[in-house]
Image (cartoon, rainbow, N blue to C red; front, side, top):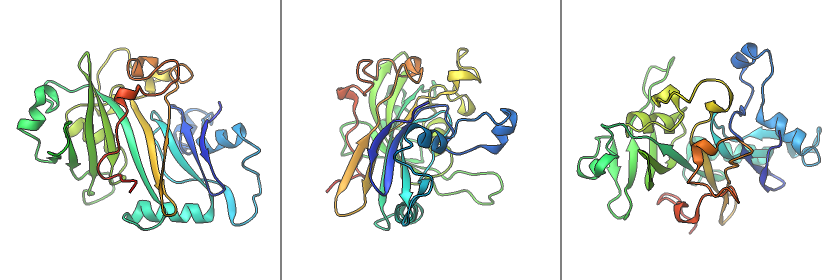
Length: 282
């Protein structure tokens, strides 16, 4: 399997991760799969051996993950190829603000609101959930979700914040969202959609999506969550990279049909999200 490269520099590379590829080796899953597991960095080096030498000269290094995407999630990921990039991106992701090399992520998600969801019939405007603050200046329904998330083996819930915007009513009970994680908790976007908006991501059985044709095993483990754009600032200016959705190559036509142009694998222009308000190129 080839890993597409969206942007390549001496210090980092931005790739387009297919779904059903692990960001890193999952040792528990590897035992179940008898070690047959697709891991991103291995596939990247095999796909582009000329760009990633086995023994790079300092200060460069073998590819290192800057952040991760879940197994069933696709899209743009940054991979560091120098110690400076690894440390600088990591510093910003941990500390935020202007520290380190800044990296902001915008996702596309197709959700299926339940009957009780505030996304149905505009209830989110008239009666927003207590964990949602609406952006009244935006002509589209948008705002910020701020709900702490709890995890096993952690005594206190963790502060978790997600910006969201309703991009399009797709019909058939489905809605297209733009999501921006302000904090980076495990499964944050998936849990905020399911438990705050009461609108699980299509295909995400773990967090409440129900459909008979989505079964564990095979391509059906893909979910309709895609890392669509990375905005990054490594110097004085912001730069941006967008990741197309490979409908046929990834076998996700059933998830994204109607949102993606099958001729180009790109999101239809009228559905492309403008930068959310916390992302500024100024």
